[in-house]
Amino acid sequence: MNDFDEVIDRQHGNAEKYTLRKQLFGTEDVLPMWVADMDIKTPYFVTEAVAKRAGEAIYGYEEMSDSAFEAQIAWMDREHDFTIEREWMSYSPSVVATINLAIQAFTRPGEKVIYQPPVYAPFFKSIANNERELVSNPLRCDEQGDYHFDFDDLRMKIDKDTKLLLLCSPHNPVGRVWREEELRELADVCLEHDIKVLSDEIHSDLVYRPHRHIPFASLSDAIRDITITAIGPGKTFNVAGLSISTVVIADETMRQQFETLSKRIHFAEGTVFGHVGFEAAYRDGRVWREALMEHLLVNVQKLEAVVQKHSDKITMRIPEGTYLAWMDCSKMGLSDKALKGFFVEKAGLGLSPGILFGREGKGYMRLNFAVPSATMDRALLQLDAALDDL
Image (cartoon, rainbow, N blue to C red; front, top):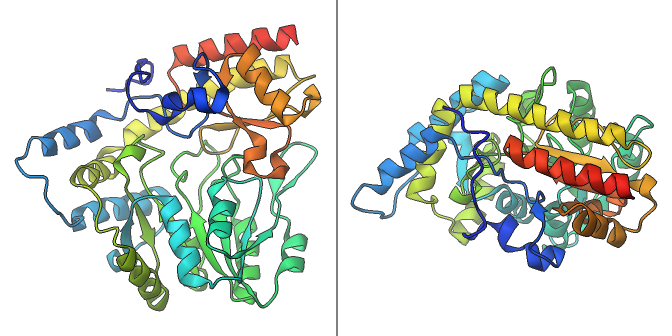
């Protein structure tokens, strides 16, 4: 039972992408396609598990069950050929929380942390907020619009104070699914310089064929032992509101450092509803996820057709992973403020300005296409008309 085309009215609740329209775009009269959650129904097997738990009499303190962790372990082994031991895993409320904890656990104030823009803003904000020195290693965009690691720049910027690299894999917002040879070269650099890696793999299950996600820690034992992997069901199954993800750290010393800090902050074990929703997603979600990917691919292909029609103004590549389109609008010749204004005032769309992902995102816009078909068609009609009039 897949309800990818059912339009859910989220305007009268507290959904972030709707509630913040006036604040972010100056009007509520926009179709919000910015923040990375889906306007697609959370799968029935998750909502049924949560509803069943809600019917029980007590919502007291609970530990996250081994069966929940084991469901994710089985998923990662089956879907990504990544073998995880139960003792390597712990709960985290979100990937962003994990990023901040990793920065605090494995670096000291004033030490250096590498990020690779244009990238999800909490990467560089977390470094700055924790009083670490930011080391920008921008991705390199080739003439075809494909992004690559810039290893020459990376090697040049590393010194004895460089302790941690934040990897986004698959990458938000550019949509790259990194190849094994790319990841191995990155790993070789980090191993050579004793740099630990926080690998944000929250979009790992949102990958389009023939591309394949390769967990960074799965490359070798040596790489596994310098890696903190952040994974969870939030993006894939639209359960960000359950506030649940996991952290995988194989090296015992690193794991103890991380968990000592986590216990000091006292995240505890999350919510009773998060536990059952998490387990149901990984236990029962394979067929649903496959159907979702087909739906998302149709949506982004429709977007690509409109963009190709207006290729004198806007270009994009279909992402290899994620449900986020990274659109190059530089040919429009607008400032970033004017570009945002065009999409709001002319197209009626609330998107994420590329500049929010670092100065390397100047002239870009990010569009979330994880919506029902009718919503996507409406957005494309508005965009097509606005570009016709430009």
